Image (cartoon, rainbow, N blue to C red):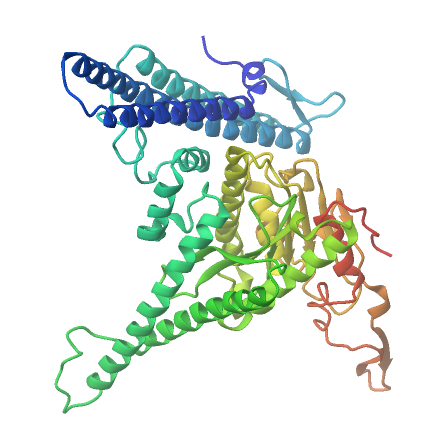
Length: 563
């Protein structure tokens, strides 16, 4: 008999989270038992029948411990896989319920779909929702069967592993597996010893730096190692490309550097990547030097870095504060034409300013608030007409926030109050993140100077206990709502269910229009300016009401709202 809608509606990933933790703790106890047995064995210095009998008994106990550790490890990882699967089921159920709500439908307890009382829903919408419900049940069935199969293999002694207590990371993989979810990574990472973690960070930082499910402090360690390495490698690449190009253009050159062709374009991209990497290093170094003089200053961390595309800019995220333990965590996303070499320092400082104001409004300790300044592959120039950059970045950012959530849940820190702030094109990116992110991760969404919300209805956002907000000044911000509804989403300034934040009316421009006798229209600013984009970057400026209200959202302080 298959699963019913009422069955899967009752599924809770939190139960499996606690079970995985109990299995991890039990595994740790057995490993400690193995260590104790080894110590006891080492103390048996004499010989004789009695001593040999004790040794034999200890060896049998160690063999039994190895079997238990391997089985506990498999149960732990199977449970973490199921936990992540249930998390996805919960999200898919939420999305079905959102679709029903926005299309005049409802889902019965038996999984059937019908129009809401007194409403006449579209037949096509009804069929589409019925298909979504069926997909949820199929997916849930696969999660259930996979977990049952792994559990049964252990119970029936069909599961075996050659690992012993002397193996590296006994009972679990030494390295993260490509198919693992963030929850599986988080459970695996917590199960490793401190020495095992540090060995991976030191010798395989490329595996850890962007690995969702690993705590952000460890990711920072790994990425700082990678950053120094990448600066050195990219600097050497730039010098080599310069030498190649010089010889290619010199008819009398020896040909020492021309075994492969180099293009001027490849050199330009390498120089841009190098400038980006150096700017990131400088942004971190600046903070490190300040902290040497005043350790109370919040620490910056390099929690994401991607320079994998040779014909693109570096993507980077820099945190301020303890993201792994802070009560409130906010991620700030910029708009178009941002690149690390020119803008990462300012972007980090903007995020920090939001954090400082949030602390002031909440009257809380500095340790309770952390920010992440995320610089994705922002569109440059005319690229801003396409929403594909927002869509791509939304998956990267959303997955990272899910990884942070999984890491905090597994570590015992618990979930943070999480907000996502997006300016301009970044607000569309943020809206798309809020639409696709899994249930229970994101609380509040703030958009300002927004060309589009990323959705057609505010009820599409997966916000847990919070809501969506928007700030839009009355004048001189022509970006608001400029994106096509079909790809950028509707204008959040005109959508139901989105609360309006302070919008600095004191800064409004006052324009007078004059029409000459010949019919020529002229516009003059009595106050302010006629520039249609003059105030587009005003929202996080110091002293503005918009900055104050946006910051209030970060720490759940009641907002003042639009005047």
